[in-house]
Amino acid sequence: METIIILVFVLGYLAITLEHNLKIDKLIPALGMMALLWAIIALTHMDVFEVNAELKELEATHIDDILLHHLGKTAEILVFLLGAMTIVEIIDYFDGFATIKGYIKTRSKRKLLWVFSILAFILSAIIDNLTATIVLITILQKVLNDRNLRLWFAGIIVIAANAGGAWSPIGDVTTTMLWIQHKVTAAVLIEHVLLPSIFCMIIPTLIASRLKIFQGKIDGDFTEDIKKSKYGTVMLYLGLGGIIFVPIFKTITHLPPYVGMMLSLAVVATFAEIYSNKKFALSGVSEDSGDFQGHHSPVHHSLSRIELPSILFFLGILMAVAALESLGMLFHFAEKMDAAMPMLGTESHGEKVSDIVVLILGVGSAIIDNVPLVAASMGMFSVGMDDPVWHFIAYSAGTGGSMLIIGSAAGVVAMGMEKIDFFWYLKKIAWLALAGFLGGAVIFVIMRNFILNV
Image (tube, rainbow, N blue to C red; front, side, top):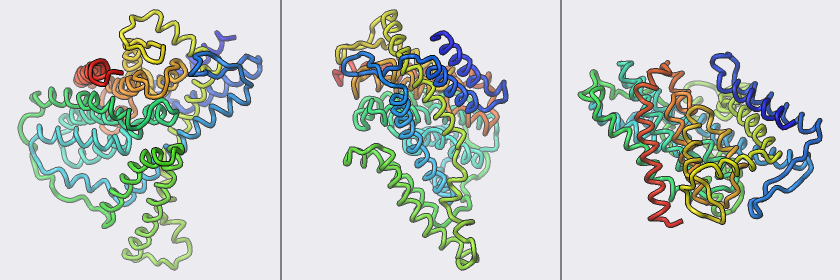
């Protein structure tokens, strides 16, 4: 029966990977795979277990209990993401991201490359790498008319955005998962992963800045302002501040992150409603008209623009991986893989995980979605909170996806917005991403072994 379970998972995973070829949204195989796996477990009365991280063993439990346990953990992540997505959409409702264009003053291609790279790195740590990529490529399209040059810029933005998301607990779905599931704490994650991520961004940008494509100046004047709301700048800083407040709230109250995100959303939404009334009253819309709030509420508008297919995909894939975890498959697979790999990691909490295993996860995230890979790793390794293994996984899974255009959400959205060819990216950008990935990994290992001494 375990063979059937693995076959269903592999086929579902294959369908997710080939979504563009099959022309089927990846949420469909993800949800179908999840339902089938749990149905097989229930119908065949297979034993289910919960991993005891302290004893490093499996404890038998009832299927209803384990299902509710995994659903609760998954719901924490999904509710958190819903709040963050809504805040970002509220900022966009007020054209808040247009404010960022004001920082771009130079016409030098090399300087502009560094501006976009640094902006992508910083923004992705706050509003997540996917949203940062969308915002910056939108601005890029208003700044550059040369499409070939835009493709190069877009490639570097993807690398920088993924690097920026890796060190922040709110910068990437995978790091958010590790944070919410109590594998890492925000402060220690930043301490271990920030510097490697900076090198992962700097190395490709530095190499690219020496290439011929980034020499000279950009033709034309692009310093004109983008039309925006008078409240755009206020909402930008308010929204970003609200998201940054979440880790602080968790540290103070020790409540799950989604509680802090809901509080931030409530505050941002309150100001949005106030400014929305002023905004539409000034433009001549009567506040006394019948469905004013129903038609013009920024909160309703923002909620309608949330990527619900992505939320359902995360639900399907996380619960599908949870099925494998509950059967003990991931736990045993991790033991066998570690036994077969050279032990280049450090001893911690009585368990040793090979650095090569973690690097393989990073390379694998360029081929396969990094969300299920990290979800699987959480069931594979039983090391404690803030163990360097989790920090290395956060770095590898977050930045490794840059090596292929389909390897990360940021890459996929850039591919769609600029119609980037898979093989063009593989030829022009992949080697830069690999250089950054390996450079950051070396910095991580040096810090772990010789500086942080963990």
